[in-house]
Length: 207
Image (cartoon, rainbow, N blue to C red; front, side):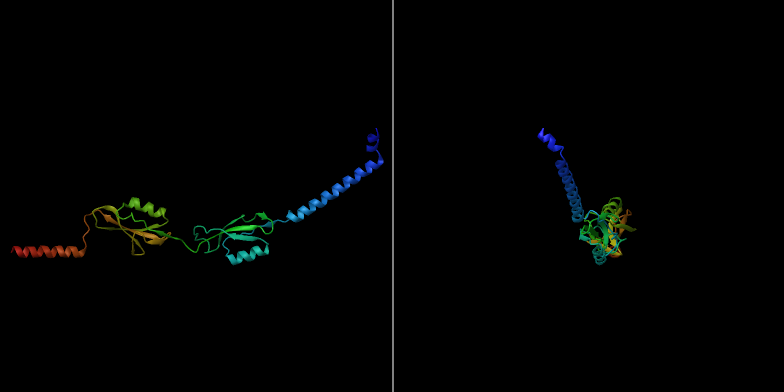
């Protein structure tokens, strides 16, 4: 009965109320300290850095107390200046805390060079065109030369220059195709002249 009487005594009730007040005050200050130490109320909107060079990026992020890190370059995009930001994480408009790192992907200075395969000559146009397009090239003019095989690729040319297997051209380069017309064996002018001279000499010897 003594314990029961103490629980309902004035002294115990006063101590209980004081303990509750102390607990509430400690909880309040603890939450305030956590909010301050973790910057819960600080929200910085990530700016749009697209097409900006690194100097401008650094100045802009320094103003906002944000940091950045460069990722590997992406495939060249002609709509963006060379070495400018082509992608970023987090995306523009997202809210982050101060000193958050923004990951950037830069646009290379130009298209990379692609090697010409060594198995295109004497293949058909239907086989060669998809191969070149899959490598990133564009098909330009189509011309023909006398040859026994119709539509067989005899030459690859870029800006009038003969392209050999193993040569490297910039991606998106235009490649012209020289095809066989299927008319017969190709003979150049020197060969024709030599044949005429040989036939003439044979006719003179017969006389």
